[in-house]
Length: 81
Image (cartoon, rainbow, N blue to C red):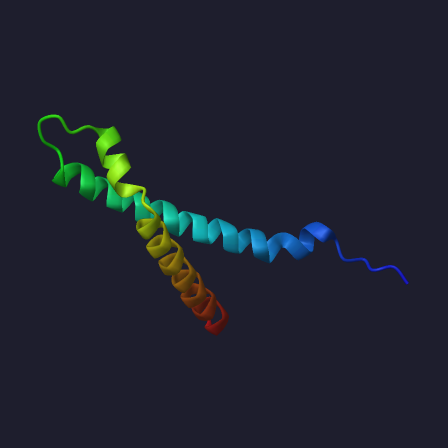
């Protein structure tokens, strides 16, 4: 017997999770970049210097962990309501 499940329908929760995690990571990096650029804004400092200081492996790990925790918390709250 054939299944009527659409493959796109099964990917919908995964795509929603990826979009939510990506948006949290975007907000994390934009906030970090604004803080770094205003803190390091002096003679000879540029946006490229701030970008170099912000995009590190440590910051990416922090962004991924916080995004996953945020996603789990919002999913829990979404199911409770």
